[in-house]
Length: 242
Image 1 (cartoon, rainbow, N blue to C red):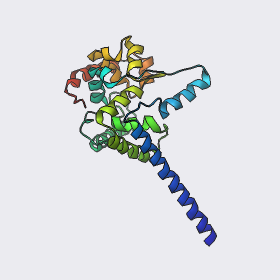
Image 2: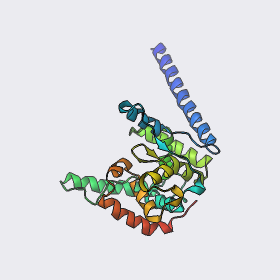
Image 3: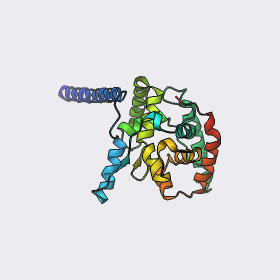
Image 4: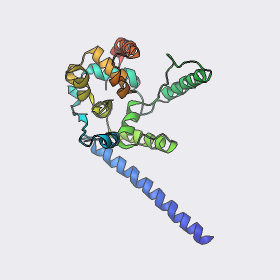
């Protein structure tokens, strides 16, 4: 029995050590990103692995552009659509998470009663910083452990990086369609212009696409996309830029 407990203790020690080393790795990587741009992300690598199973020659469309060369229209639209309190919170917007949970409970209840989901849509409470944490380092699996790790990385990002740098990296690595990543590739893919030239309405449309970009890439005439883009266009002038 003592031998078993001893081995269990060693295994637990090794596991804790591995977890701590992983946190150090994330911490160092984020420190590197203060001055150097990430060449790719965990999400990009995962997506490419799937795509290249069908087409070994497939490549991602992603072109890095500095913060100053991304239209303020897109910055404002994305903040309005994805994280209206981005400039205020410290990485996690607990009020938004609470509201999203309440909304999703209502949606689930209405669907459970046989009603169509319709205008009541599932909402996420993740901030821009949380989304960046997930895209940079984590897999797409849903679990409490992964969510916990996401929160740790989120606070590391907020510790190491300015809000402007977080938004710059986010806009350059987020998925905007099937194989389309970052603002520059998205602007050229959908509108044939650079990310610096995006109009308010174009920026709003790109922002609305973010929760489900591949879906809207194939359904650009979606009535919801048009309606929601109009709403974002009206509100985005109030967004606070870092």
